[in-house]
Image 1 (tube, rainbow, N blue to C red):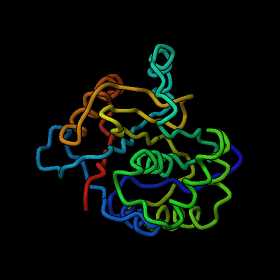
Image 2: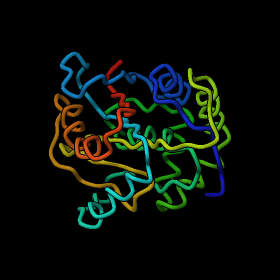
Image 3: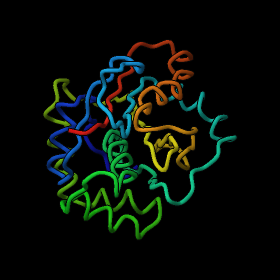
Image 4: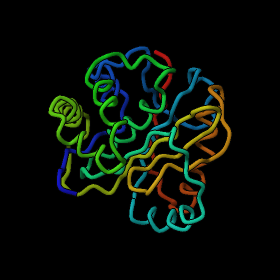
Length: 216
């Protein structure tokens, strides 16, 4: 990966200002303390999952993706070519696949998305790396978190997003978005929890975190 950014913290107080600065309105992220939490607002649009030991996850997920059903072309996907940018990629994958359902506005994200949809999954990452406004928004968020950024990053973000009644797992390190099954705005957080339960059990590491994208 040619470009390298500062890693993002899994924290609504970091993510929400990013969303606002990019021109997206009407949605926010909230902490997910447990996936069956009925107090999480609805509609539920997406879950950003941050997990540890990404190299172990690669080993666990490799055979799953070899058998997986790729999402169709209506699901926006891009391959990550920017080191440490997985948090922003997970957020962008969530927002891009909610076009028409939430207010993306006409700011830097919406303008980037228009251009990104014109190019392939590899070139979309380059468009982001070369977008100084979005890179600046990421950097301001990454350096403004509660945890000091470190050089060695072992955690990785992915997202689960609902689109057309289906739940998709989108991991920018994988070759495609993976269809999980059916979901709804009422059950997405619980469905995402079920989808990642095998990872949580196999890693046996408590340093998972998740945030949900819901109405503001």
